[in-house]
Image (cartoon, rainbow, N blue to C red; front, side):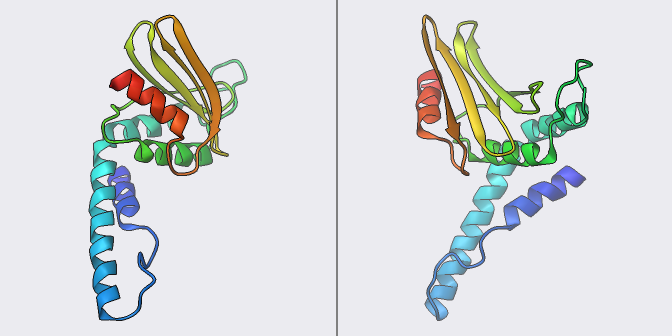
Length: 163
């Protein structure tokens, strides 16, 4: 129930006016854009529903200090919220990732199409994305900032991985 309500809240929230205009025409444009935005966000939210539940499970299992029995840092609520935003920013053609937690408190995302073809991404509460990809003998890695959209280098990796 809470997850469904959260999904609805995400879908129905957003910036107030989408157009700076004033008057009846501007109101009609804002209404249409708002309906489109809400429908699109609801669709994206529902398409990532299973992985959103996995994210809740990662937080429940790894949200306390030492969750791994070795002193691992907890996955914070801020990290989970940043991870949720990352999931919603993924292009619709990208399949749901496998989720996990890293000992430094980051959420990890993994996509693998073969044993030597895939990408692993780690995300922290401040939006730092670290990634490592392998394409057979070829490798790519880097660090980017997540600011509500997937960084271009990571999009290029997804295109190569998923065609």
